[in-house]
Image (cartoon, rainbow, N blue to C red; front, side, top):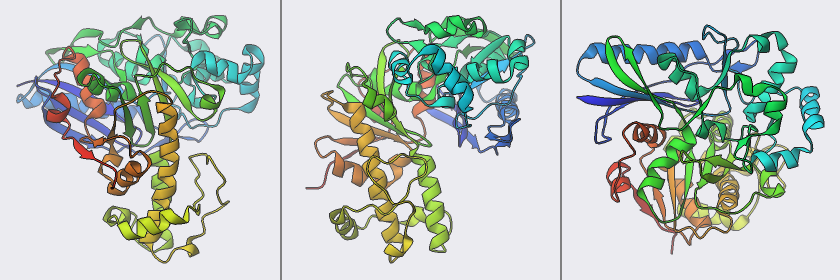
Length: 455
């Protein structure tokens, strides 16, 4: 059986899929890999362990003989660079995009290149320090000049995994366009600061997302994709299959609301609230807003479990209690202190669990407050676009309370949940198979469920 192999590398789970020529998933494997510490003792992904796992998965499938891999592609999270020397060897750990950014260096950047909000408007990138991955290059140049001098190429993470097998260093639009601070969206070119700092010399040539390279692995010839940013990959099946305007809320560690139909210019207020532009695989702009939904959820459910003396995964057992939910919604109160999501309104300095009689009550209230922030974020992405529907994929598509509260905030739109595990990987596979699709694609491959607001 001929198959396309896709590695979907998230911050939490690393997934490996095989798709047949009809995009049917015929094999899946996933793993979690413990973080390690970088050279500043900050947590980071274990690049070598991920790389070894990828090579092992390919080797096992090739030796199995049941499948013939014709193509391989990579979908990964963004805001991450791998810096390699002239021999292709990584020079640094895979620095975490949440790593603290030295204030002195950050100030020197804006002293050179102007007001941070003006810069943000030009690059469609809210000022997010390490999450503006271009600023990671500036940090390396001035904080670790000896390392910077040895860099032959700085590769976005999807393109690094591609490089391992193709040996061709490239840059690619969906990675360049994800809040990097690299790209001037008005000029359709790298921002002037990239050339002034000489950073363009370590950024490989730009290729389109559908670029492939022929390679031989363990005696088997296959096409290697250039790699794709996971949010762009998750969006691709929807844009190819649905001509009507929609919003996609892609959930996981990050919840990213993606609007590929917006023509509104980002305002300063948008940028300050983590609303930005991505680039689609065809170079068009996607209006997006983000919040660290999954990370906040994991933190708060751990705290709930600790306070109520429950197992850490007890939240998975909670069923929607409609009567309790309506009672709590009427209170319109805030009890939770969030650590990863900035509040839009006032919130307590710490969570007071004594307000709740049970885990169930506290969990329902937590989700009410979390979904208030999710709704505000999604409304920023929609802005004035006359969308017709909302799609939700990723881990929270299986959370009934999440979906019910979302219908409460968006009663005017039908909301569709889709099979949660395939979004990014399937988009990466479609790139390798010529983006074949039809009008029934989402229904056939995404196990869609429609949710309407309560009457």
